[in-house]
Image (cartoon, rainbow, N blue to C red; front, side, top):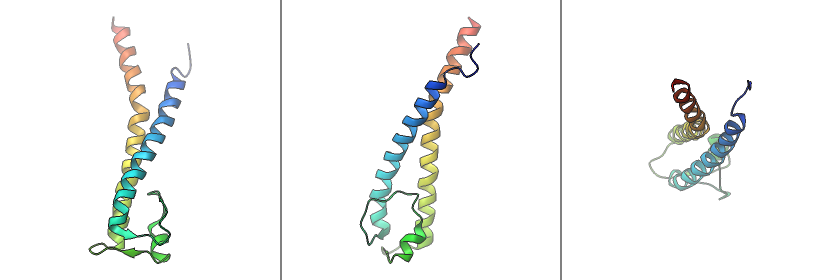
Length: 106
């Protein structure tokens, strides 16, 4: 009996989930970031970058935004990043468990 069945599937789906989640989140964040504030260095940023670093670097807020709202948006994007990553990583495991439970009944 294998102690860790389907470990390779789990590792593969975890890595694939990380890559997909990273690119989806960074693409969405960079579309919205320019509507919240103007970054002085104009580099592609990841949502995990601290908002206070932007504020201290002299980045300017767009009209209608506060730094608190930008921080709240960042937290939503971080939660989405981890949720998508977890979902992609866990789906193959759930599928394997379901398949195993159906085979044991038959």
